[in-house]
Image: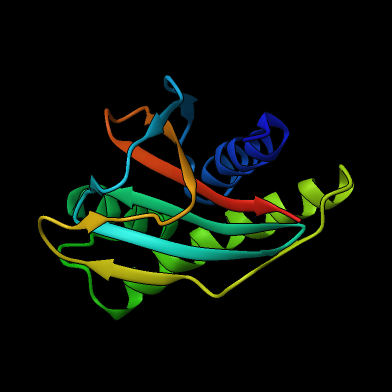
Length: 156
């Protein structure tokens, strides 16, 4: 997988988390995931189409999702993932992927993104058929980790 496709996702994630949720994210050790793989209890999935096809999946714990939603809502307590907090987390992901699409476009790769889908559950397993998955751990200052899994089917 071309690293030039991954860097815009990292850059956009760090920028949007800092600007929208006042959270600094450091880059952890990037690695390839074998399919199928286990995931955290909250997944936000966004499809990618255009010059590259695949998906980006943000996974995190339920507590981290609530903490991020609280930060986005200026510290308002979030004790459950209700409609408002789910909307906030989904919109954060949408902003990250929109920024990544703009960065890719400015570097000569045109993509479109699908609306985010948020999945909640325990013991979720993800199976990527015909795609390599690069995991980008985003290490947050509150000891939380968001795993950004980027799976690209093929270069057209």
